[in-house]
Amino acid sequence: QIETLLTALRGGGGIVETRDDRRVREALAKPVTADYRLRPLEEVVRSLAAQVEIKNVFIDHAELEEVAVRPRTPVNLIVRDMPLRSALRSLLRPNGLAAVVENGSLNVTSKLVAENYNRVVGIYAVGDLLANSPDADWLIELIEQAVLPISWSSVGGAGTIEFFAPRDYLAILATDEVHDDVAALLARLLQDRPPPRRTAPLQRGLLGSPRS
Image (cartoon, rainbow, N blue to C red; front, side):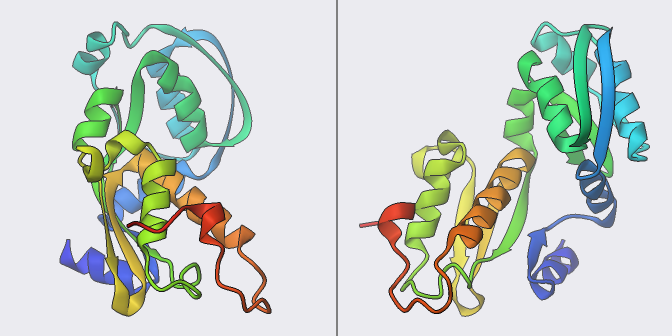
């Protein structure tokens, strides 16, 4: 764990994980195409995983039963060149399920279990966003308000955000799904930030207010 943390820091950020988990996570970003109509859920999941060469797939049958779903529950999925991560969300969310990465395997379980046990640390370099800001409080508050607000420790959840000032990193403990949304949010903020020639401070009122 220490080695993977140091690797993430040296590389400018990323999810702190094992090499096997990283391979699965990278595969989740690859595009898949599917036209499944009333096919068994487990068959569809394994077929999608095979398209991007994910070999280890675990279907948590006990947790499926908790949300009244069976491996052979018929499902529909029609997508074209969609990242596997997004395709799985479209497939699993309506059934109260989620996909998580653990021990080099793609696991399908209930959304409740996924939210409660599968938390990993992500390191995010945010120096560019904070260039004109005295601190990171406004950015932390924005993330907590915009990304699954009930999941953060500030309101009793288990997710945490810590800011490391010397290198302008955020260390975020959260689920895979939350990390996906945080990464997308930060990318949008970078894209929408004012051009470098502007000397006015970043307008925090548009992105979130500083903490009191």
